[in-house]
Image (cartoon, rainbow, N blue to C red; front, side):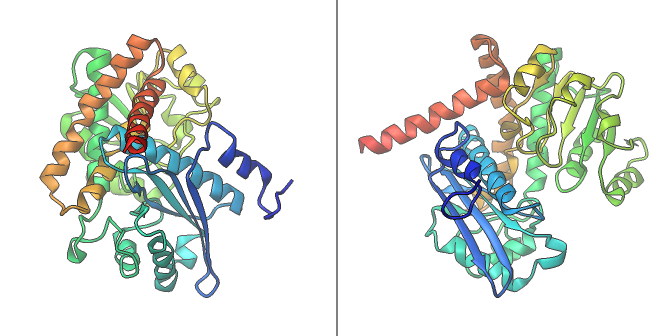
Amino acid sequence: MTDVTGAPADVLHTLFHSDQGGHEQVVLCQDRASGLKAVIALHSTALGPALGGTRFYPYANEAEAVADALNLARGMSYKNAMAGLDHGGGKAVIIGDPERIKTEELLLAYGRFVASLGGRYVTACDVGTYVADMDVVARECRWTTGRSPENGGAGDSSVLTAYGVYQGMRASAQHLWGDPSLRAKRVGIAGVGKVGHHLVEHLVKEGAEVFVTDVREDAVRRITERHRDVMAVKDTAELIRIDGLGIYAPCALGGALDDDTVPVLTADVVCGAANNQLAHPGVEKDLADRGILYAPDYVVNAGGVIQVADELHGFDFERCKAKAAKIFDTTLAIFARAKEDGIPPAAAADRIAEQRMHDAAAARRAR
């Protein structure tokens, strides 16, 4: 079933009627000359201009791309609120295989669409886009972050994303075991790409026992050749069943925690960099019922957005790192709120973020 625009009706229902909707604006972008098809979703600008990355991915169809943009944009509202940033949440997706269709012409066309929003949306890197791509986009759009230092940017944001996840792991260890040290803890990382390989470095340095897996053999090989003590496993199904696993870190695409994985997960803690790890509402309760501590993804993976937001004001790495270090305290506060309210940590984080957005919107209306 479709609506009058030809879009699947369930997409518009999500946008206008469901609890997962409530987005302020969704822009469908097409440039036939370059082959660009993109979706820009703005969930909230209550705290300030929407900030979020650009994902370049070969979606199965346009409806899947729109749904992903909506989910990711909503997640960015919560992430930015919990990170203490004066930014709302937005996200863009470019439809297609970046290995096949990404061109300078396409990125420039995309930049023009972002610029047409007049600063309501600030873009950055995400899956399938890199610093060099943002340098191209920035030629048409000044509301672009994640650029190279040579072009006035901060460079690779995955460094601080990994650092924030590491702080989330330390907070989880403090809450669960009474000590933030990860030494001798078994940590399994699914996805050792942009963020995952930096996370490995933190864990190895601290003396954790690290297991990794990735769909790309070269990504795993890069890790194991550098760190002989890091162990590779065949796939995520094997990783989540490792005996004595202390922490499971999903660091690839979303939906890692679902009805199949949660019942067999051996870890005591889930803390990873992937966005939208909970496949559907209710998974957070399933984790809690099994006694698995979940560090909300959008809280612990906020290091990258802290970095790109800082770029708008003149980037300073040490200032950003100090802000990202506070993810430790924020995560502990969420665990405390969850215990106080008798709810899972994901629900506690949502409540805190929603209160900040509500207060900001109310203050704006009162002016």
